[in-house]
Image (cartoon, rainbow, N blue to C red; front, top):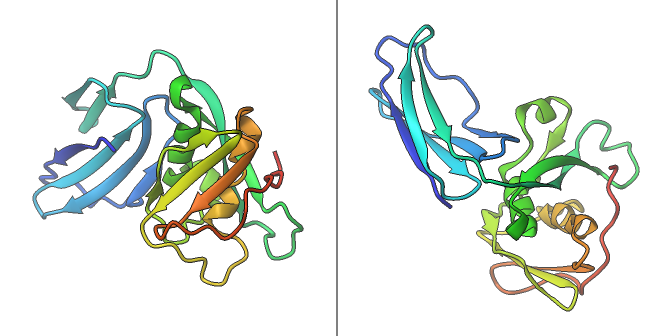
Length: 204
């Protein structure tokens, strides 16, 4: 992951109160992370879609820092699937709602996974969408062979006894990528809980 860190000198500026992690549906930026406040500076990590040139501007009226990121020349649309918490306990499956995300054509499956792990955008969160990470930090690039996408998770993985886990969201990926008919997901111990299986359809 490529991260650009922006130190911001607050001076007499008000305290920063936005969420520590924010996902975006922008063409060139996936996520912004508040990486810390030292008392004199506040730093942000910017997760771009790919390594790209960027420029930083300090503007006034109002006072702000602007990051201008070069966007990919071409993107296509994929879909990320998040848990819909509204009425989750009473609603029948499927429990997910899919939302559109721009990805690079040469890495559509991996781009969709990156967008998934970034989580829903703020407007989507207000609609009750949530990313269930199951303690996982991320995933490898999908290795696709014979119609099966093999995905290796990174970081600790625990479902906590829930029937809905990060695998429930990842397994829906094949709907949007014709070469993929099955998904096999491995934890850090190279274990998988089931054989390759067809995905369950989402609400969209």
